[in-house]
Image 1 (cartoon, helix red, strand yellow):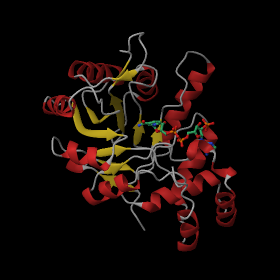
Image 2 (cartoon, protein in one colour; image 1 turned 180 degrees about the horizontal axis):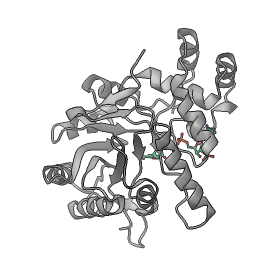
Image 3 (cartoon, protein in one colour; image 1 turned 120 degrees about the horizontal axis):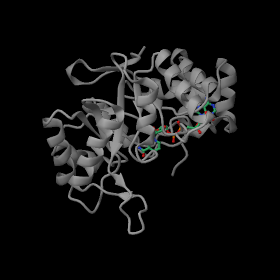
Image 4 (tube, rainbow, N blue to C red; image 1 turned 135 degrees about the vertical axis):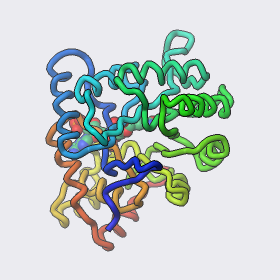
Length: 279
Ligand SMILES: NC(=O)c1ccc[n+]([C@@H]2O[C@H](COP(=O)([O-])OP(=O)(O)OC[C@H]3O[C@@H](n4cnc5c(N)ncnc54)[C@H](OP(=O)(O)O)[C@@H]3O)[C@@H](O)[C@H]2O)c1
């Protein structure tokens, strides 16, 4: 059985089944209070990896996590992402990996998250208009200054990952991936070979998997929900897989975390393996 824990370097370990905070409502009101409850419950239930980004509300999602969880319990890793900014001509969001932008977003992230160091900082996207060496060089400088602990990437190809690894150590990759969408299988395999954490986003196919007859059938046979089947399939797929399902609902949170205890046999896995829909 694969471990439920992933170990980064220097003894940093997380429970592989994490939580994606993107969907939590941040505007004031009852939904905000409910969001605080969900994220606190995630930690109570043993989640030690929470994913956020500057992009999620322009920092509001980071603030929500700090409001819910600070002072943080030992062993909790909140990872955030930088590199998308409102720097379009009309103030719209665009990829922006200019060194000053990355630095500012990291420094503001530290303040908003009330952290002295962001243990895993991900580049949300590679900005094609800024040399990669400048983007990663800035993150490497921030790491040397102790402001971030490790560097991750998001939505990269194998070639981009290789190119990045020639510039800096890469601790994680976050690409879209689930049982129905395996476009990034080669990237997962590259991560596996290198011992790099792979954080699949959209891991539960946005909650839509019950509509797929084969998934619903496997779920019924194993006595689980379709979403749990997707998560169990991911966890069994690779020891470097760290799914970050997102939900704003307590019942879905509890359902998702219980998927860690579901083990799919060879036959069920093989049926699910065949479901990949080419992009
Ligand atoms: N790097 C990137 O470019 C990128 C892009 C997108 C997302 N992300 C990260 O990845 C995380 C997850 O990705 P995602 O939110 O796109 O996809 P996801 O986790 O596959 O889907 C989340 C959606 O599924 C629903 N859901 C969750 N658990 C469910 C359950 N047990 N039953 C039914 N529905 C359920 C949620 O609705 P309810 O609230 O109703 O449960 C939510 O709308 C995000 O939170 C974010 O941190 C990263």
